[in-house]
Length: 344
Image (cartoon, rainbow, N blue to C red):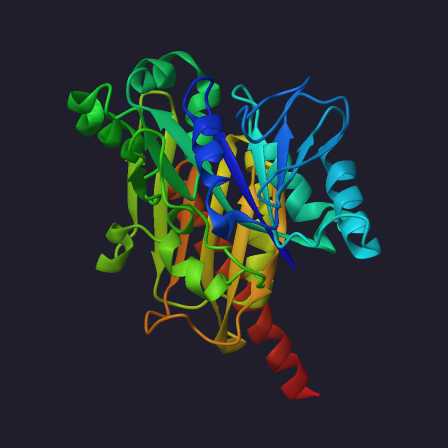
């Protein structure tokens, strides 16, 4: 599978500058860059020249593509041309979104489109936040809040221009998405290996990444929650008892039906009664849920269920009650079926 990283962030937050510096790193060769933007976009005059062609070969061996129509078709076309040998054999894909974009549709495509899923797997979502205007942007533009909420990691930019504001913006970011680490880019420069796990051909390493999803609070053995003025809630549910497999299926269905677009992102690792040695990794964005991925073994000695929720107007108490209710009903049904089979 070809790993895909998404770089998002509000207008002027430094996405393009960051990516331009990254492309100078030899480790980024054999990378397909997709700019999910209308019209011609130049990352850097030394790297990309304005062109009427969709695909532009870069001097460092990377391939750049301007998306003017459909991202799914572009990804499928890239994979097809790679297989046919008419494009370089790129080893990873980086998608830079529009500054006003909600990343959710891109995540939906990577999670659900059969043509895309044949060749690609989501590696991580990277969001740039500008230290100079970041606080005001978060307050004025809900798109910025969503971009931070869905991130696996946050890159703080322009700290050299407003060093005094670093602590305040970090605190604000943490209030929206406490599970994502914040890294500072100095003058827009960051080592590529720091930004991308996928520096080389590999299958996306779920075992490595799943432990990074869980914020420090979950290590204390307690569920935790945060509530914010813009009605974005972030909480982590920690459960000692495993869930039945059927309970997990019912839970994902209930979340999709009842939360819809309000559930910005959900991800976690779940202990399953029927498979005690093989946890299930779950991932959802709004109403779209990836099929659970079964790991061959637990990534650590911690075998509790831990699920992180980031959304609007979603109550932690409701989710906890829903899980308990569903699992109790499934347990009841299992006992009744067992008793019936014993009687026969």
